[in-house]
Length: 175
Length: 417
Image (tube, rainbow over all chains, first blue to last red; front, top):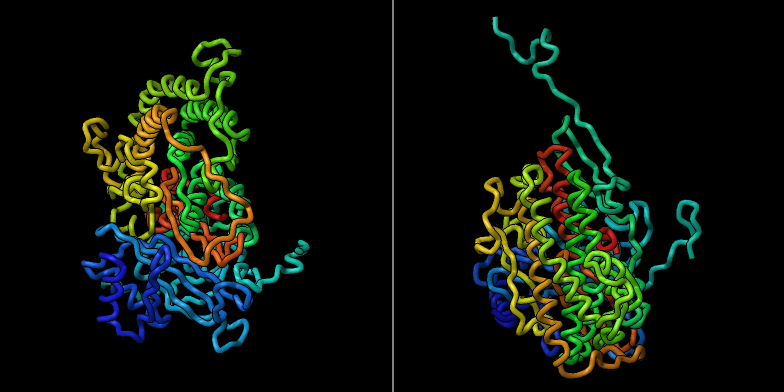
């Protein structure tokens, strides 16, 4: 099974509305999936016997606030969730991506929403908590979306590119 | 006249005990660092375990976005500080994959020697500390006696004993040393003159020759010890499906019977390092006659299996180091390819996992045309292995929690990053 075959199977099953693009010509090719369909797609690729991506190696978010025109890769500001998958049954890697706006409705502070895949892979529970904590992504239907690495009362999401370190935290001076 | 439950004369239909919240850690010695477990117990029986992590959080990923890639190598040391060489290797390989660099054969052989030696040292700590968790002190002392010599040898290689920053993008910072004074521990143990001068590779060989027969002693002390078996076998059973679903890797995964090791099944940039070597991958239920007869209490995926995988990997690593050292003098090329700090990373992104002693450590690096990565992510293997504690500890006794958490062999520096 190659990523092209997975892409074709997903296109047949979910249509071009949900499966946005197959990015090739890069070191690790990826499939971009519409944010609202990711939970269904995850369930499908996990259960389907000939795809069977049963291992979630990594799930992480990254913030693309990249409006510098001098950069080689100009892009619209957005937030990505990257899923690195592996099939222990068929022994191949696969990579999925979900892109959402940085804030819901363009209102700063309104975290973007992505459906949770914690019901599909057990480890996604903790990885999504970490992505929520550090990048600021609201995983809907997550069983227990709390901060995991930062303290519960921490403000902001440190891996956002426009994050500012707090001036003070419980009497400890920052900056 | 029969009574019903609603009868006001019945005060208590059944005797119930109260649920109690017990806080274990973050300073508890058996939590291997600053792990805090919140136990919901009914008497001695655990109902629920909630791990709280983050006490060592330094946000290394944010720091990585502001440093050139070789500058971030010292931060990877401080993640899994018991296997810092393997962490250096993982990140160096990820950057090499991103920029499409090929390291020479000599550098690859050097990396095999160094990372397998570090695997031995790391598993020795895992073994000794697990003994401590279960209440036996002696294996810890033996393990640290052996590890001390490996640290002395590493000190000769790069000057540091714990945070090496030795393996770097393009190869390693220095070639292996030539003539050295024998490490004091090794001189004492083998009865040599403490001022003896010898080649570094010969010192490694001398150490391995001395250590190989000692492994039998560890088995007598721990693996085949009746008390040890009673405390570990048939406890904390992790099924194959659960191990895969919870992203467990390394000895935890192989202890559950999944035959998967990235040194053989990984991506080509990593597996070509191990091409041409003869080694076995120990996987539960250990059907190979070389492993001997298992104690009859052992169940696939229990604490004992995870521990035994580590012990057997030490044997394999010793053999790998020996083979690599035989290969080293005739390996072609240099020990490194020069890499400038200001080298611009291409606008691409790569993810690479390597087989560290504790599991598969992954690095995800996004370049955007600058020397600093746009996003540097470290996926921790212990983080995934620890996430299994909740389901695994349901219904066990409080005293068994250290036995289960210890068998996962976690390092908090890597979990919190």
